[in-house]
Length: 215
Ligand SMILES: *Cc1c(COP(=O)(O)O)cnc(C)c1O
Image (cartoon, rainbow, N blue to C red; front, side, top):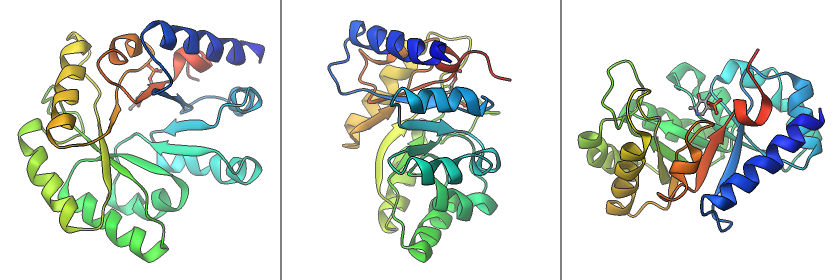
């Protein structure tokens, strides 16, 4: 699995070329990838990973986190309130808060577990009905709700529509984060991370370019 180590090195090189001066964190999106490939990334010293399903993450990461205690895991999928308990126990950052109901459930569970995780709000910048995330006009109200709770919102995350130039969406997310004084921007995937970096990404989420095609 030298390929994964080579891919990580290549991505780091492309990040630098795109303007990364050390500010950008590379999240290795390990959903639907073999344990062998994940171990190859760990073997190459990589420690930041992302998963989009609580159930799937639970089959792998509790054991791997015991073995590699410095692993940090971002949740990047749609979070149902009935999975909040497992998500808070396993993940280190929740990137996809998109409703007051979910924010309240997360706040409750973090209180119960004594485990306060930083969260991002997912913004549906393309206002696509089938996609998760809060639409931009509802972001201020959701941020207000989170402020009333103890939920720490440190950034915004988006997944641009497939058929539109992603840069427009990255620029919008950057503008929204600046307006609300939020420092983190999770944007850019395998196909478009080089466009997200000059627009201020602090986290990019890369799956196939790092691990190869998903199984
Ligand atoms: C799967 C996934 C990614 C990674 O996608 P690639 O195109 O494989 O890099 C990034 N973000 C989210 C939210 C995902 O679900």
